Image (cartoon, rainbow over all chains, first blue to last red):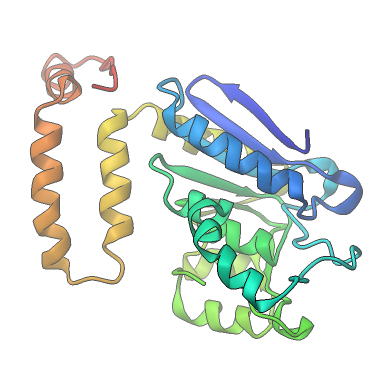
Length: 145
Length: 110
C-alpha cells in the first residue's frame, strides 16, 4: 500500500511511499488519504497526524506523475463539471484542509505540485534543510487547482 | 490555491522554487532542521500537540484557521462559543486542577 501508516502513541504518521518515483502522486495516495483521513479523525486514540515522504524516495513528493500520459487529462469539460461536487467533497486536499485535528508536515525534500499544496493544507511544517517547494504547473500549461 | 504568506505564494505560482531557508524565513515552515534531525523534531512537535487536551486543540486549530480572512471581531465572537463549550469539559477541570496541584494533567478527550 503506497500510503504507509504507523501509530506512535497518540500520533498517526502517514508516509507517501513510491520511492522508485520520488514519491510522485498516484491513485493509491488519493484513495489512501480518502480512506485514512476520516478514520484518523474518528479515532479517539489519535490526537495529531504527521504527513511525510518516504525517505527512500528522497523527496516529500515529486507531484503529479508526468511520465504517465494520462496525467492531467479529462475526458471532457462536461465530465469535469459534473464531477466538481464530488471533487470538492472528497479530494484529499479538501479533506486535509478541513481535518479537525492538528496536522504536521515533515518536509524531507522536494514538495512539488500537489506535493507542495499538500503541505499548505497542514497546520504546521517542519522543514529539513533539503526541503524545496515548487509549483511547475504554469510552465506545463496548467494551474494548481 | 490557499493561504500562507503573500510573496512566496505568488513567486511559487509562477514557477520559482522556494528553498528551505526562505520558507522558514517567511513563515511557511515553523521549524528548519538539518536533514538527519527532521523526524526527531517532527515527533517532538507532534507529541507536544498530542499532550494537549484534544478538544481544546481541535477548537484552537479551528479558531486560527477560520480567522485568516475575516475581521478579528468575527472570530472573537465565535471564540466565545468555543470557550463556553470547552468550559463544560472534564479536561478543562482536570487541566486547571493539575496546574493548582502542580502535577501533570491526565486528559480524557471529554
